[in-house]
Image 1: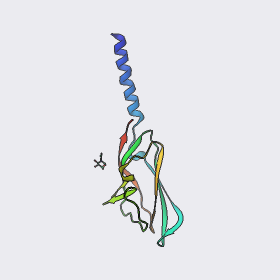
Image 2 (image 1 turned 90 degrees about the vertical axis):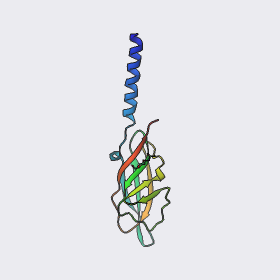
Image 3 (image 1 turned 60 degrees about the vertical axis):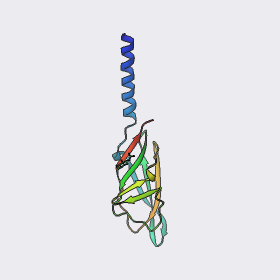
Image 4 (image 1 turned 180 degrees about the vertical axis):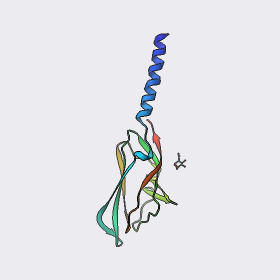
Length: 122
Ligand SMILES: *[C@@H]1O[C@H](CO)[C@@H](O)[C@H](O)[C@H]1NC(C)=O
């Protein structure tokens, strides 16, 4: 009986640990933006690198991208803007410890802030 109880406690403990292990929130997502050195239709080209530093995959990443414009066409499966928000990678996963990047072209940059995401625990 005691053994079964210990076993159950261990399971509970492990599932708690593994849940903690794959926590990730929007504030963990970091964004780096820099000039590529090229221009597209006379606009500066920028590269945006979205880094997922978490130990779990995230998907359905939505970022605040108010004011975003691009002279360079961006496939909606990469970035789709709706109002002040942009869905990244068509909502598909950005894997653990990986990054997702894209280029755009405009005179000015914006501040990219992750606002929501879903976490995939495997
Ligand atoms: C994706 O994120 C949006 C914005 O937070 C949310 O409204 C939507 O329910 C999410 N989709 C899924 C499938 O979880």
